[in-house]
Image (tube, rainbow, N blue to C red; front, side, top):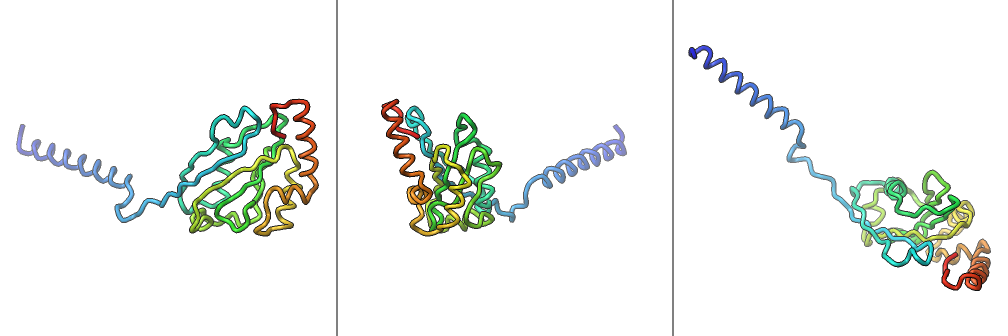
Length: 192
């Protein structure tokens, strides 16, 4: 091999090595760019029937801290965390540890997206600031979700719990009576 061919080969190898190094270097984030802080949020739900309460429904979900509350709820909805109820009608009240108002919205099986009574564009880090991040989905059977959501909007107080909401719209006594009748027909039921 001549000197000329040797140096051309060396330059070609160096050029390939430089190109490979330059290409792979571009694919990685610069060292000074920090990874987004992740927030671990505990989610849980009510059981929907007697056989559904044999195991815990609690899960942890990790999301970037700057994820909006709306995006978090949509992620939970799309992940099918809540069971699909036959008849395609189910109402879930969303309770949050990050809000002074415990019940912050409604997620219904028949809706395309959850509806909340607070600012859902807020990042989860800000929403849960100073609190253990928890979301709980309280099952309201097939009660009309629009009625439940309207009531949550009408009485946004610290005292606003699901029981008060259902009492206000007159479903609590109906639900108790319905549960009583079901218990006579199916003693093992215990659910709505």
